[in-house]
Length: 156
Length: 155
Image (cartoon, rainbow over all chains, first blue to last red; front, side, top):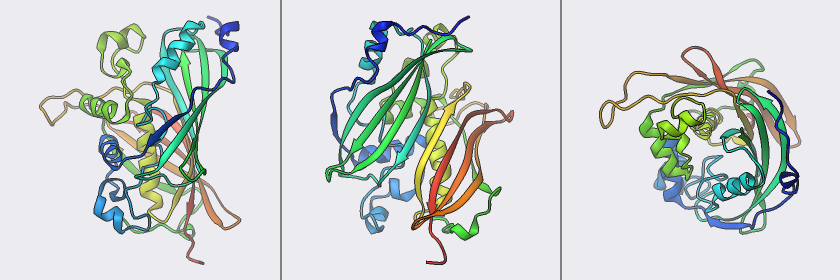
């Protein structure tokens, strides 16, 4: 076994940005997500309760926003682009880092910008592995950056 | 909501109130629909085999959502989660369904955390925690950290 060797085609993708995606945060989508992850917090589930809260609306649980939830961005298209440049076909999620900079809730309109921050070759228990880090920045309708996420994916 | 946690209530070395979770194949379908993560790795036996993970696995992002749930339940509505990160170090497998609603026996997971640091920065009272998801065998397949702001009784 050996570390994955990053091809020139892949190196050229480092620093590239995808076309920004605009999407709206909706309470129904938040409720479906909260139910799916088993989070019964009334701020994320109960419209009346949330309306009485200091936010006055259903709030998104931290992590609701980001890949892949409700952003309309087809992440698999990006994976296909990496594959075309030489990424191995096996794909696993490696982890995520969030900076939650401001609350996000029903009605917010966000712009998501995705950047391929890094592509590295490593050796893991899956064999030679390519590690890709995407840095995603989310800006709301008032121009405030509300969230930064860094997702790591493993191709092997 | 549960009672509010305050900065003064927290001690370094203290525990985050643990959360018990299970994952079923049905829950993975529900998560795929709610999140938009339709990777066949989470519902297609042969596909999972071809990737060398044996059988469909629990979404890393679902385990991550459990850790968010752990933290937001603990810090309460007056607390604010500032940062969270986690890494997926091993595979976890869902329970299969026996009836429409009930799964077969299988793994149970426990989301846990420990306070590693508490400090005041400017106006904010902050706590840093080590967090993880542990299975029945005590294996920590998802590990990470979180930073949260808590209200202070002094204010």
